[in-house]
Amino acid sequence: MTALKFIHVTDTHLVAAPRRLYGLDPRARLAAAVGDIARRHADAAFVAITGDLTHWGQPGAYAALREVLAPLPMPCHLVLGNHDDRAAFLEVFPETPTDPAGFVQYAVETEAGVMLMLDSLTEGTHGGLLCEDRLDWLAGQVERFRGRDLFLFLHHAPFDVGVPGMDRIRLLNAEAFWQALQGHPRIRHLFYGHVHRPICGSWRGIPCSTLPGTSHQVQLQFEEPEAVPGSHEPPAYGIVLASPDAVVVHNHAFLDDSLRFPLDSEAAEAAQTAEELEGLALAPA
Ligand SMILES: [Fe+2]
Image (spheres, protein in one colour):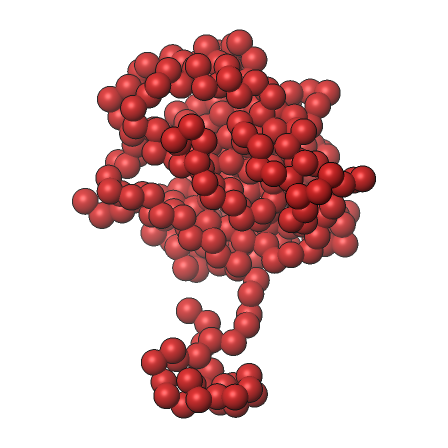
């Protein structure tokens, strides 16, 4: 069986036009990612965006999101983050499935396994929480799909990443989340957002990864900050190849236009400066 290819995007932080955010245009940034995905990965089964779809939860920002995502040739599964507004989101995306309690949680069955989209948005805090209703729904899905491979999509990581400003607002009830997973034997991967950085690792044996956002980033800072430090480090999205054997996540900095050159060329190897290499430059893939 060939690998299932899908795309992970996170923290798009759209704002309604003509506003910009932290000196950047999140709409244009996401549009560039969408264009790149449509051009290079039209064969991907779906795109999943793990929250902070918008920055202020404005209806106009969700309308902009709908417009910017429209050129994607594959389905796009949306997950809410702490910057989102559930009611405003559902006004603009009424076709998105919800669980019986009205939270934006749903299962997507694919040939590689079942993708569970989870809703950790909790009003009044930037931290995430899965309340009893959401945990009950999750436990039900885990039971329903006990014989299938599971992939989880959630905005807030259930563990510390070592960046104090973000760890304070992680998933606040990780133990209850763990209990709801009931020791499912085949949780292949947890895709999360929130941290605006490229991070991979595992949580209690479950492989996990996140990515830079498509707009602004969070600085890598392990010391206790006075404020959460942002940055203009490059944005990225992830290309995931999921087979029965492996889950591979590529981090693609879609705005990068640095020099491409042939690695197997002796002339390129011998170049002493970037200028010398420019004569051998390859077009971007
Ligand atoms: Fe975010």
